[in-house]
Length: 144
Image (cartoon, rainbow, N blue to C red):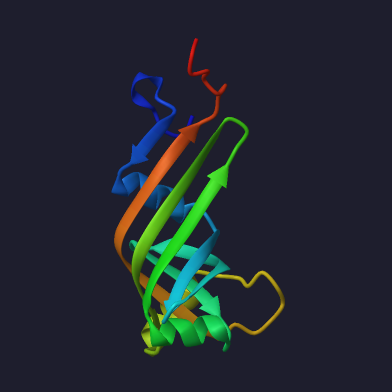
């Protein structure tokens, strides 16, 4: 089991360190964006480092939307045969522009899923992270 659940509870609320432990060992997530009344949720491959989230992107909707409204939500999760987890990170995204920032992001080896040019690195400064860990089991009957 990844995390010890007190009293064998099925759901564990993760602390900040546990959330970052999971994010630092995960490579795929979803980025939530909002411009005006339009919401988007897009898959990204990412790396977490120094309690920030980094990903690459190309010109298009994602890059345009986070430039218009940099407030984002990021979700990553994992599912195993007997347990699962989900982490949400809320923060502010920005395209990296300084050479030393881009060099750092490049050192993270964030490889695109598909063989396309993704020349822009984005950093999400996280201001709040929350998560849950779940233990699978039989669904309880209400009237046992």
